[in-house]
Structure formats: structure tokens, C-alpha cells
Amino acid sequence: MKKITIDIDDTNSLDEILNSQEFKDANHISIKGTSEDGLFKVLNSNKCEAVKVLDLSKTCFLIQSRFFGNPLHRIEFLGNLREIILPENLETLKTGSIHCVDNLQKITFPKNLKKIEHHAIEAYNLKKIILPDTIEVIESATFSRCEKLTEINIPKNVKKFHSPFDWCLKVKKINLSPENKNFKIINNAIFSADGKNLICVPPALSENYEIPFGTEVLESGCFDSFQGKSVVIPESVKTIKHGAFKNCLKLETVLIPDSVVEMDNFCFMQCDKLKNIRLSEKIVNIDKSFFYNCGNVKTITLPEKLEFIKSGSLSGLYALNKIIISPNNPNFSTYNGALYTKDMKRLIEIPSGKAEK
Image (cartoon, rainbow, N blue to C red; front, side, top):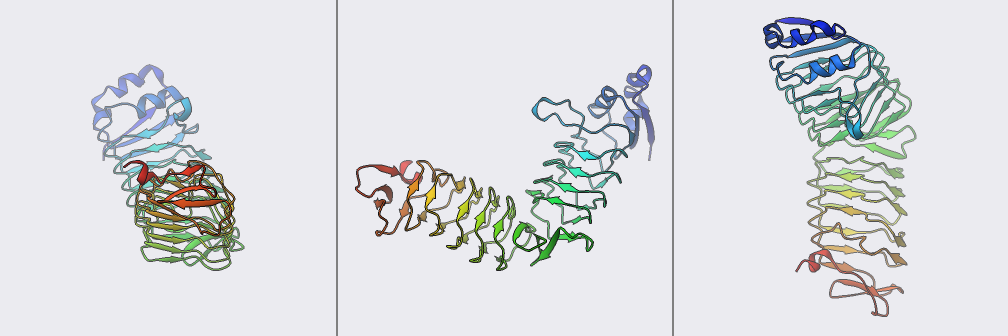
């Protein structure tokens, strides 16, 4: 393997090195120094197409992202890259740090790393993640479109953990350190230590999933990219948070029990095969849009004691053609699938499927 070491602080010779044949032919590039402009030049050079190993261990600053106008210092579009060694002093891996690196297979994390932000890593061929024990925070959707990733570990010091998967459809296993006292594994999923909060279900569990009784909260993204067809929610669940069911492309059936008293905006997002929905009878006010881009739902049954529904709350159900509510409801009635006030004087909601016709 042809190796080259680049000192990004040596501004006098940097351009010459980047234009050299040695740089073009290098398979293993080691970078050292503190110059942000120098690192920018190297990572954004279109002449390092042969590089397979990128060693950043001796760079002395954090990798940044360009989100929201920040400077760009990230690893992006290096088509032959197989391995990245991150900076030794890195404590936070920022959003967008490793982006669209198609063939990346290995990431060496530094021993001082404490936090990984959302959407920090997008690498299609990455199969396994081994995080250091120093990690304390793993944000939501940390791993985006890592389509061959099959398992990750949660180290002993992790205190804050949100569902880290976004379109990582092959993750079958989450390994929790036996020394971690903040979380536990129940029924192959990650829960809070007291077992009341469901945090993350591995997406590749293809069988129907039954949430254990005693669970009270379905956290944001807990079923992100889940591949099963149905989820059974027990009567102990009280709250369903934003995006709990997100990108569940095969999900057909979810029964929301009457124990649920609170649902956040867009609890169901991109659930293409979801067909029929029955809401909890304990929900008396619908002032949010529980559904986003659920294009196959034909009918929805509203709570018998519903007191208020905000106009447009069902607009995310594009194929909806029938709204059902008990004739005993004192506030609303339905006619021809649409929702009206009880006296039929005001139209509240026309199903989106009917409105398009």
C-alpha cells in the first residue's frame, strides 16, 4: 500500500503535495497538524481517488459540519475509502461528519470520544460499529442509511441514548454493556433502566413485535425503520412520542389501546402499508397531526368522547376515504365518510382520499 503523510500546517508545500503524482497514487493518507484550511483542501481535493485508508489521528481539532452555514470539514464522497481513523482529541462527532462514503467498512473511534450527534455517519457499506467506553451521549438517527450495518454496541458510560438508526434496515442486534446501569434489554430492545420507556427496537426484527406490559412511554424513533408487519401495544402505555413509528415500510397494523392519553405530532411517519387506525378512547382533544405521509390508510376510528379536533389533523392520511365516530358522540357526526359538527352545520374534515376525487 502506498502511504503518504501530509502536514497541513506546512502551507508553503501543501499545494505542491496535492498536485503531486505521489498524492494521486496514495492508498493510505495520514494527516497531521492544526490548520483547518489545510484540512479543508485535502478532504475536498478531487485528486485523492485511490485513497483507502484516511488517518486523521494526528489532527488537532474537531471535525465540523456545514449544516446551518457552518464551515465544511467533513469526509465526503471518497468512493474507494475503506477505513477512517478519527482524531485522537475528538470529543464530539458532529452532524454530517462522515457523509456519503459508499464503501467505508471501518471507523476507528478515538478513546476520548464522548458524544455522537444526529446524522453524524452516513456510510452504506459499514457493517459493524464498535464504540469506545468513553461515549456518554448517542443522539437520534446517528447512523443514517448505513444499509449493511447489522449490530452496534452501547458502552458502559452511555447516559443519554436515542434511537440511532435512520434507514438502517439490517440492524438485528444491539449489544448493551453489562456494566451500563442506565438501560436494559427486554425482548431484544433497549429500554430505560426501570423498563418503563421503550427507546429502540432493532429495525431488522421482521416478526410481529409485542411490547412488554409495564411499558409506559414509546420514545421518539423507537420503531424507526422497523421491518415487522404489526406491533402490539399493551394497556400500560400512556404516551407515544414524535416519530415513534417512522419509516416502518412494512407495518400494517397498530392497535392503540385506551390507556394512551397523549400522542405527539407525527407519531406515524412514512408508514406506507398501514391500513386501518383506531385511536385510544382516552384521547379527547386532537390538536396535532399524528400522521405524516401514511398513504395507504383508508379508514380511521375516532374516540367516542372526542371533544375537539383541529382542522387538517388528518391531512397526512392521503388515501383516507372514511372517518368513523360513534353516533353516541355529543360533539361530532359523520356523513358520507366526512366529519361534521353534531348539528351538521359545519364541515370539520374531508378525508384526503375523497378530496382528491
